[in-house]
Structures are given as structure tokens and as C-alpha cells.
Image (cartoon, rainbow, N blue to C red; front, side, top):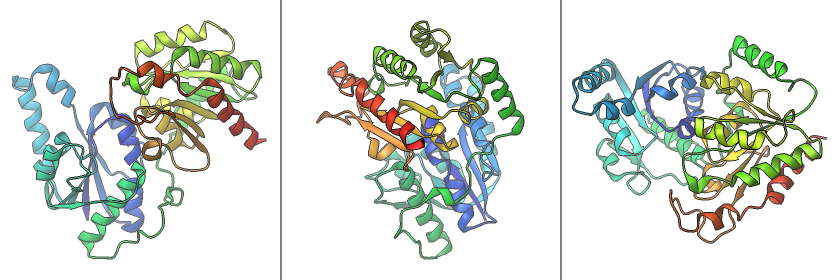
Length: 360
């Protein structure tokens, strides 16, 4: 049996869906799984031992070149040919928007499964699927798992077991880090003076939405408190040059105590996170990757909903802005500053202390 998973982007959303391949193969061990994904995130899928093949697309490049340009039309044609070169037993659209619907529609399959009309992100998506499910779970990981189990059960005509919450710990590790990559990151951190004796707290301040961010001066104060109490050293992670510039505003306060990860591939990032004792950040991809690697996290939620997006388990603490309008799901807001400062430093620092006290 061969299945196509459609989950193209963004980084955090791909990470949310990461364990699904393992869940499906736990039920059907001989299943073959292809996954269509944006090229910028394809490398992270190669760390998933349950995925047999990653099909790359680059819709951002298509838009940059112009959708009607010769290069774009040629690339689209080649992508569609590759997608239609296989016959799938079923397609599983885990994204639920118009873009994923396009690739779901193009793929050749006996059945095409997706979310019901009141759960899709964009309504045209339902035109691409022929079987749609409404799922009851609130957390996105469990939503994706429930949809996947319903789809597999429908196709195989078996009864799904949805009575108990899904515990992804029993599926097996969804991240297979190579030893050479781990060794490179270990040596890098040792050279920076971060290993092996002192705990490391990883921080990622940036995210694409302003309404997800925590103020930079709050990050400064949190990092200062951690170092002053000798709890850990701080290792800042970044994804864009703008984020890196903001980090150096903080790092320059305490040279020798605040450190900056030099950057690298997504595999490098996952390997570096393996050596972190705690990771703190807003609702963003690196935070969810840290949780997937097995690192305890503290996550900050404003525009998005902690109960939906936060990592699951006792090792993870999620903090929601204490305002009636949160979560608003708005990328821009006139009350942005009030919301950003509604989670004080003392609350996040208290969560840090709680994590470290539980380890002692």
C-alpha cells in the first residue's frame, strides 16, 4: 500500500505532522509513504526514518519567477509529471488550504482524504478531497493523528481506536540524527565553551508574525536573570539576518555568558538542539523541532492558541497571553504592545526555575 502525505509548509506545521508517518506505519508496517513538501523544508523530512520519499516543490520560486514565465511553467509541468508518475492507494491532505488542495487534486489515487469544510483553512480545499472528516481533538498533533487514523481505517475498512489520546512516545523516534552531524555540533559547542559541564538554555526570539513575538527587552531581562543566578548559559538561535541582528543586541550585554549559534542546515539545527537542556521561544518552527528532538520547552503564545499548538507532555510548559482577545489569530493588531507585555518576565523565569527544580 502506498500513501501520499500532503503537508507543504510552514516549518512549524511540517514539524507538527512529523510523527504521522510513524503512526501510520505502526498500524500498517509495510506501508510506503511519500510526502510532498516545499524544497526549503525537504531536508528535515530526510531525518524521518518512516518516510520513504520526499517530493520537493518550490512554489515560492514559482511566484518570484512569475507563474506564467517559461521556467515556472516548465517546473510546474515537471512537478506534476513526477507527482502523477505513481498511483497511490490514498492521499492524505494534512494542510487543508488551497495550495495543498491543488497537489491533492493532481495526484493519482483511489481515495483522497482531508478535513471537513468547517475545519479546512481555506474552503476550496474540499474540492480536492472525496472523503472528509471532522475531528474532535483540540491539539493540532492529535487532530492530524485522528484524521490519519480515520483515513487509514476507512480505506482498509477497519474500526479506528480513538478512545484513548495518542501517545507518540510509543511510535518510536520520528527524528533520526546522523552521528557525524551530532559530532560536528558537539565539537562546535565545545569550541564555544558551552559543553559539557554547564546547562544550556536555547532561545529563539524570532517568528514571522509580530503578534507572536515577545519584546526583545523582555528576552534581555530573562537571559540576565538566568545568568545572574548561574542556572545556565544562553545559546541564541536564529533563522533570518534580522533575527540575528536582534540577538546581538542582547548578546553584547554579557559576552562570555550569551552565545549565538552560527547557523547551518535544518539537520545542523536539529543536531545542535540535541545538546540543549531547555528551549524557550514563541510559537515557531525551531521551538517545535526542539520538542520533537526531546528537549523540554517553554513556549509563549499570543495570537495563536497554546492548547492547539503547544508541544504535548509533562516536559513542556505553555504560557498564553492573559487577555480576553488572545488568541486572536491576527498578524497585525492595534493592541500589539499591550498583548506583548502581558506575559511578564517573572512568569517565564518562574517556568524556567520550575523546569530546573524538577531536574534536581
